[in-house]
Image 1 (tube, rainbow, N blue to C red):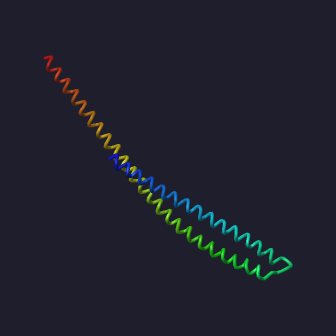
Image 2: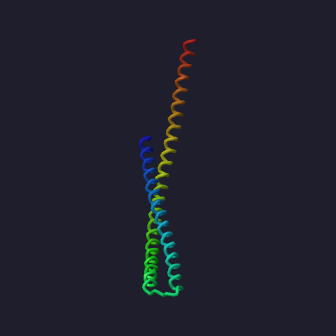
Image 3: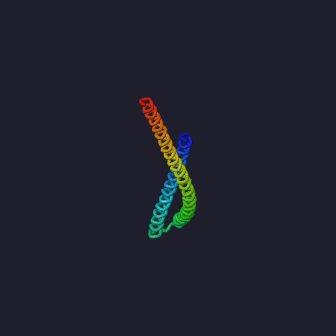
Amino acid sequence: MQVVLEMRERELEERQMEMAKVLATLNSQKQKLQEIFLAQEENKNKLEALCNSENLEITQIQAHRDYGIKLVVDANNQNRIIKNTEAILKIKQKEVQEAHQKVEILKKLKEKQEKEYYQEFLKAETKEIDDITSARYRLKQ
């Protein structure tokens, strides 16, 4: 029983590590999305500054506009990646939960078996004491 319990605990730890890796990946992906948003804001400000300047440079405005479009596409792609990673995270959380339940069931079963063992041990010990007492009583008679 102990071997199976240890095996299940190792499986639980592995599942938790997998989930932690996915969570770390998700956090880095969200950070990357925030960086894209910051780049969009910065590009927007630069584009506004270019449009408000006295010298309108069409090539620079066009470059910032194209870069803004690229950033929107990047943000959309990053959002899709985040959604996929969140789906994977939910699967990993479910796997961790299932592994945890298996460990808890085995722990309860082990406790129950230990309790039964000790009850049997006490019953056998009591019987042995009764036999000794009976034998002494017969010898006295």
